[in-house]
Amino acid sequence: MKGRNPSASDKRFHSQLAALGCIACRIDGNSNPVVSIHHIDGRTKPGAHKLVLPLCAGHHQDGTGIPGLIAVHPWKRRFEDRYGRQEDLLAMCMELLKLKGAA
Image (tube, rainbow, N blue to C red; front, side, top):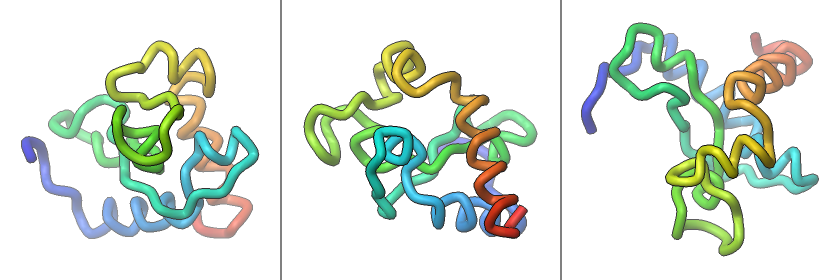
């Protein structure tokens, strides 16, 4: 996959985020602990591995996971209309990490 490799610090951060479960499922009132890390603004820019969200398969990529979920790829606009701006979702994740004492 094209992009910069995540540092050890980035990997720890990703693990902490992943432990939160899918942020979109959480907003829907569900719990889904099986997530992948979604890069909000690509993988090649400096700091790209800090701008990430924990998303389940169905909220990350269309055609995967539970049918009927709005996936950020390729439905970014629909996803953000439903769940909010990705930057705001990251801020929500950071608050949750603070509450858990992880950030």
